[in-house]
Amino acid sequence: MEQCIILYNEAKWLGKEINSIQVNSYSQSSVNNYNNKVEQHTQMTSAFNKDCAGTQSESAYRAAQKLNAEM
Image (tube, rainbow, N blue to C red; front, side, top):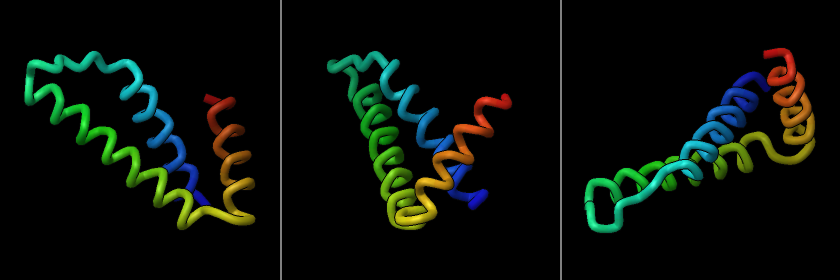
């Protein structure tokens, strides 16, 4: 369960980071950096869905929300 919470939080933070990135479409390194972060986020959300899905996903979501509220 703890790993699910960590994964949820890291994916959430990375998603926020991705949404705030300004990609310079003329810079290959900027595009590559963005694409790498999107790929990492995709892998994280896929892992969360695979490993924490079902009955655990709702309780992991609630636990993560509670943990975040305490921070």
